[in-house]
Image (tube, rainbow, N blue to C red; front, side, top):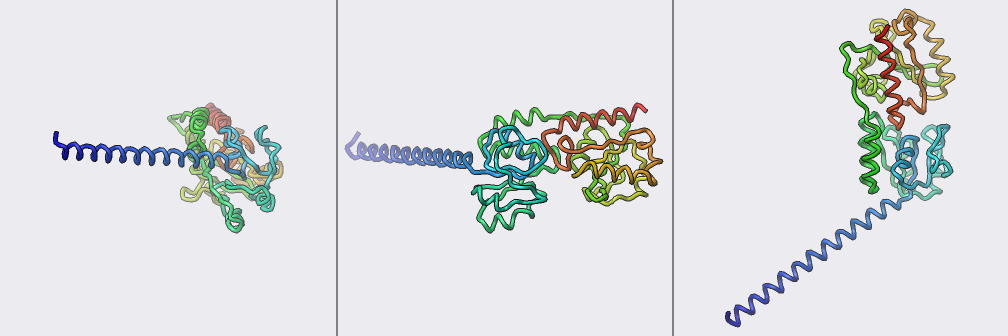
Length: 296
């Protein structure tokens, strides 16, 4: 090999080595940056504003600095943390005093928090608990974000429910009672409606396009449900009293569900308008009610 060729080979080798060093350095830098980003994410000062998300963060072993104010029992490791109110009574000053990096809110309640958090330069992230599949997806997303993939996978595995196939689907009316005496009809796209559908039931007297609508007594009478589930959104004793009073009037006394004693009153924490970690218990009860209705 000539001196010139040897020189060219040497130059080529140096160039290759230099390229490898550059690639290796970039790869190392990228890995370090990603690692630092994940560590920073894990060390975020986080505030949760609903019970279901607080339960999930506890299950995934993600630290919090603030939790919602509630009458429900919070996970033991989160009970003594500062309470920051809830969507009915937001304690914004308390949230700000905790100097959070991020505040998590339910996707249906962002308007209660967005403006003031933005004014303070606090990041807000919304989480979707609208139904069972949405909650499972949310669990996966939280696990990915905070390097808790294994815990998230295990939790989702624990929450698996099996759909029921029935030759004849029991007709189910879903009502949500509000403090003050009014109540709404829920459709199949609500959390509870999805559970009923999975259990082999058919939601009746509801608007297919709107998740919740005012009661239409004529539609209820025509549907004649086999099962009625009455959910108290808040103040369960007061709501149940209102339900009982309303059910003395037509068309309720003539409905199959009322005559066959297939009216079930439910409330938090097991049942709620949005998905939560009590889903398997709630689903089991719904299946049993539908089974009972078909035995009569």
